[in-house]
Length: 357
Ligand SMILES: C[S@@+](CC[C@H](N)C(=O)[O-])C[C@H]1O[C@@H](n2cnc3c(N)ncnc32)[C@H](O)[C@@H]1O
Image (cartoon, rainbow, N blue to C red; front, side, top):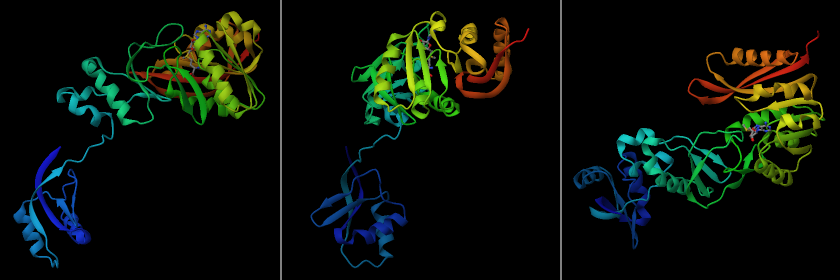
């Protein structure tokens, strides 16, 4: 794109002298490209020809210059973020709906495009591909996470048509199939936190492992044995790939099946991870079958943000009581992230013991 603007043509070798005066007066037009012509350079300015002449008359300049209107090329603008990349294609009254966040999983982006601007979904696909050279594919969230497998529908928007990627979390490579297995890149800190707390040589059971993020984080750092249980075949296929591409010092034993059905095949555990928010409380009987006295459990829930700790403690206490177990010690309470308005995803970490009759 071309644009006519006032400019000053000077010998190239003298450009620095003039540039410093123009910079001090903040009148260089930064939206336009400088013109190189033979041994001269033309600098675009945001003032009138008369103003520029007056300014330079008060300065000692020992070379010829030419002030005139020139035709400049507009600089190509590289958007810095998604808003800048799509704002020109979406009417201004809808700008408030442009998402500020999206999930980056390996070289795939999944964005939640609000209903109000859904007709512009192709623009989001194109914009995200051009913003990040490392991104190969863009999807949009087409439903909430649901069902036993905790997966959501996603709609392809742009790039390579693929579902598989390798996501890196704190140096650990996690194979993910975004179409057929649950994965949230927002849990990276939590995966690492739990792994850091575990001790060498422990037996750990992840009852709802998904693609195995907790087991991978743990066995990358500790020489422990982690049983990764899940009913989703695709999730465990991903885990199989991750085991091969990480140099793990511990051992992961993937087990396909409903954790209640296969509980008797599992050993007694030092730690049990239960990241199935909303349903984890229905599996406390399974926990009591595989726990030792003083086993540590990581109990995850979506709870109201007004009294999350009390609510979770009550749910857990009640369910343990039905199995004649009790909380021995509350070790920690971790707020992980906001999961909905006034609702958080949280983890209550406790040790448990059978109740003496
Ligand atoms: C929230 S996702 C797991 C997240 C994973 N722990 C992580 O941090 O990435 C819950 C997983 O539980 C699995 N699941 C649901 N019910 C199950 C059951 N009864 N037994 C074993 N796995 C189950 C689902 O297939 C899903 O992969």
